[in-house]
Each structure stands twice: as structure tokens, then as C-alpha cells.
Length: 148
Image (cartoon, rainbow, N blue to C red; front, side, top):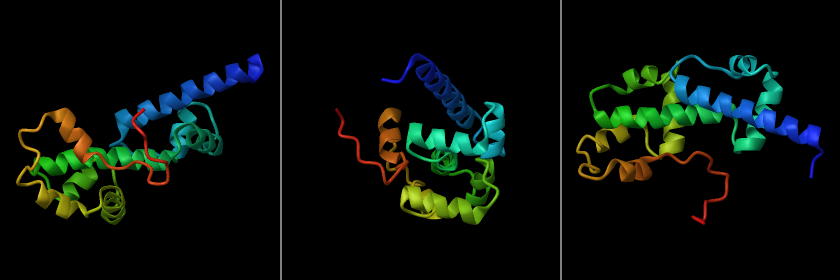
């Protein structure tokens, strides 16, 4: 077990990492980068990147993009915005990068996802179930949860 000063530092780092994650969850549509997030918690970008990956199993950028894609999925299901409008609404600055990442996480391009959900196959399903069915996979390399 780590000594008390090491343990205290570890707990402080975890609290700072949680602040970074919370900020990404709140401000995903704003221009965010690792350097700005690191400055916000008084860490270097490299240290934040290493600690974030160790704590959450994915990079800061990957977490940010997944959060943006989750929001984009909801906007595309609504059907009143184009893929380009959704891309910029969730904070992406490149339609190509957005489409590529969306396809990686969801399995289909955003235009196909939008078209498939125009008929609302989840209509009438409780929102908690819709969220489970439509959630993207965050980290494909991570072992699958066993449900225990």
C-alpha cells in the first residue's frame, strides 16, 4: 500500500481528473484541447494525458470525442438538423473527422444513422432503454463488462 503522502497525492490527482471529465461532459461543444484542460487543473498536458488514460482507460481526446458522438446521436435521432449542423453543434470543427469517428464508434456513418432513426424504431421504448440500445462503445480495446 502506498505511503500516506503518495496516497494523498493519488487522491488529489483523481479529484483533478474527475474535474477534467466533468468539464468535458459540460463543455463538450466548446473548443477543448488537452492543453486547455491541463491548465485548468494546473497539470502539464503530458501528465494529464498519462494520468487520465491510467484512470479511465482512454485518452482525453477519445473521451471528448465519445461525449460529442453521444450528443450527436441524440440530435440525429431528432431529425431536424443536417449532419453538418449536428457536427458543428457538438463542437467538432471538421466534418470529415466527425464522420470518421462517428462511424468508428457507432458502426454506421452519421447520415445512415440519421436516416435509420427517422422512422424512430425506438419509439415507445422507455428513455433508459433507448440510452442502452443507442450508446456508442467507448473503448473497443477494453475488456467487456461482465455485469457483476
